[in-house]
Image (cartoon, helix red, strand yellow):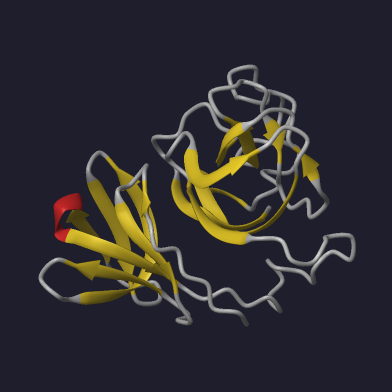
Length: 207
């Protein structure tokens, strides 16, 4: 496994995110403590974090937290299948945390019109009572005109460039997606009500 570090503040959260070789996520607190577990939600100035494996739920004020270290990516896991044969070698890559209750997550990547971008997405989000979904979204999800992409499954991983409403479906697709415009790349969840969403997708972007 290749170690990758994201040494930047994610604009939507304002926290330093690091991709580490740990199995669990780690919350780094301003008082020096480190809490291992799983990031649950980021909303209204608070960070919800589940301690350990299925342990108690903790809530921290944003000002108490200086960073989040994301758990490792194992390319042999089901969520990250083998590299697509058609993806060119030598592409830059960046891991992005797509938080389920944030409308558009800034990847920190600027793309050009006509550029081919590849994605590997994994993880699971909760997007309502007893409703969970992976990057492909909820199976047999009905059409909902209020979602950004009404004809695509609810809770699926989607993208856009800049402020455009020319959204595109990402899901679990490993094939190249050709950018139709130039600008900053954003990733989000295909849902019209984000407030009850928790969890995140972990996405590797190759560009």
